[in-house]
Image (cartoon, rainbow, N blue to C red; front, side, top):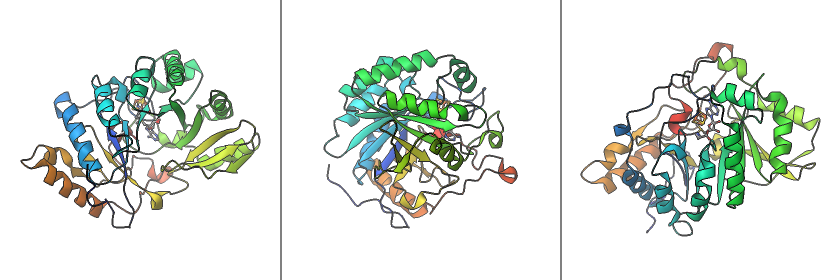
Length: 334
Ligand code: SAM
Ligand code: SF4
């Protein structure tokens, strides 16, 4: 595919990374992500597999080189592996990589198919190794299933990064053990600050934990040396001397990383959000379903470049406990 004009936003940032949500549905109900009675979109509103692929091609034509599939839970979408296979054929050509963020519940079934389709690394979200805490946090008793999924991913040769949302009073005390376990398994791990996206049943402020605090705690036990490692994402990495592994910190609230932003997000209904923390939006589904989809997608992407904001304005404190944005993380996929 011939590469068209690159996507450069109003702040001279080159956008070459797409996070594509393939469904808003999920088999878990993590308390920091969604309410227990979450209402999902009617399936008719969600893009078809063909539309998702066509859209991805529109992005590739403008220089997107990495695509991360996400959700909701991407592996609960039935035709998901077909999409991965279609995109996987571009790896080594238009794409550098196709990756996936998953909660791991379906990995035992799909890990080998993903690897065969060209996926090399995945992010698996796991906030605790305690079955009761897992159940309390995700409202489902499926920790053993997730651990079996991780074993399958390892067997399939997938590189795994564990993503852990740090939650005060829930998993903060467990973080050193999670780090040791992840590194013992040969997995990287990144910690994430909880972000004020969408109404949930919990009070987010009660659970918010600045990662600066976690890092200080870890430094009592481990030697952390700043690492040169970069994945093109917002994490800042440290090598952990005692385990020989790597830990990343994703701190949208305490350490703004927007200056290096290289990404955009598309929801399963084809809404493009140039910023995870902004309300700016471009309708790609309308472009896809127009008379001249190729041209309309191209001009929608140009519009997105004009409206991509310089930075997000997330805050969590006593005066800002309401969600900064009404949409949930499960819509844009993190
Ligand atoms: N279901 C998949 C999963 O859990 O990995 C993919 C989608 S999930 C929305 C992507 C990531 O966002 C997960 O690591 C999850 O822990 C994180 N997440 C969800 N809601 C969040 C919030 N309000 N603040 C910070 N991270 C959040
Ligand atoms: Fe589902 Fe992921 Fe949200 Fe948990 S964080 S409810 S697994 S979308």
